Amino acid sequence: MASSTRRDRAVFAGVILVVNGIFGLVQGLVALLGPDSYYAVIDGELFLFDIAGWGWWNVVIGALVLVTALALLSGAAWARVVAIVLAVISATVQLLLIPVQPWWSFIVIAIDVVIIHSLTAHGEETARA
Image 1: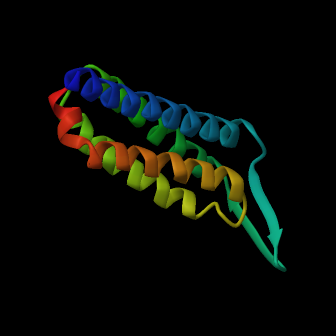
Image 2 (image 1 turned 135 degrees about the horizontal axis):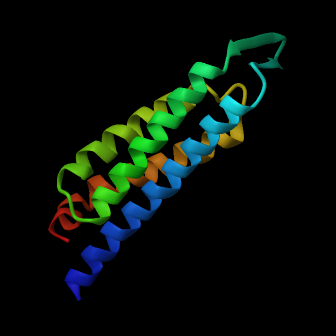
Image 3 (image 1 turned 180 degrees about the vertical axis):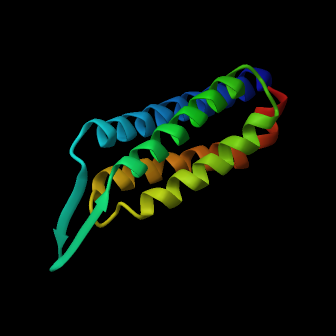
């Protein structure tokens, strides 16, 4: 019973990582295939920046998260640490988008927090699974 619970937590963490990786890839591809610049007026302030670099950053992070998720699902011990680091980076990067895309940013940050919690609070169980 305990072994199946440990495996379930490892699978949960891996699946959530896959979802996060897909979100990063989609966000990056939308940025790359969309307009050349992104702008928004918030509280009288104008945010304007080139989106190509942002898009490539999200594509790279999304791809790394997907590879890490597959490694975690296959049982690689190193994948736990890499997944935590990538989730922290992803959440930090999303903080920059809160003024422009608050709902999307909060959703991705929440998923990152779930990943971090799943891999740290139950990390030893995940590693043994």
